[in-house]
Length: 212
Image (cartoon, rainbow, N blue to C red; front, side, top):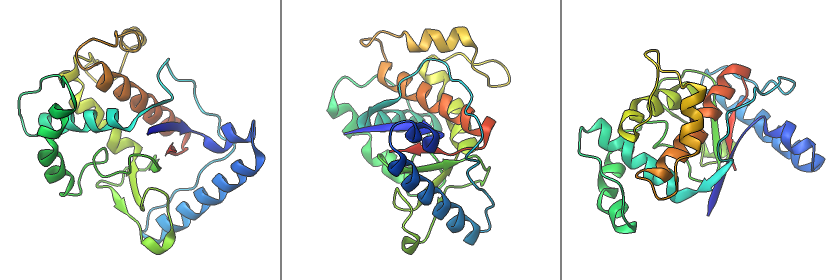
């Protein structure tokens, strides 16, 4: 199964399906109300233009998300990081990933694979909204700022070159998008780039990153 990543989802849907755009707007409004119950102030600015992103994937297999999570966990635990040769390589580190996720501190780890939101509010740890509020992704909501910080933390392990202040240059973004499919960490790099670009756009325009 694949996950699509979109910033400005109501604007994107309004060009192809007005009813779907209306449903998405209602869901985002419900998210805002639920966040207010946790004393987090945020509302999707529906008219805000979404900045252009550098070339990146718009969707990817959920397994790619798991592979990137593995890299972050190994970085945080100061463990050796080698490319995954097959599914067994991912399974070998599953317990480590689950243990780190159980700390409820990581925006990358504590999020649904297929649905849910990252909002551009620096909330510290991920949020776990009440089940009765019926928020997509099981009520797990991350911060765009928090996710971006975690992406920057694992960038060196993937051979991603950031500037001293953590920015990704256009030339480096282009290099990442062109990484061959058979290169080491190719999957993790493409997922990293997609999430990085979504976070940057989200923070710039105030709109949520939506997994769908």
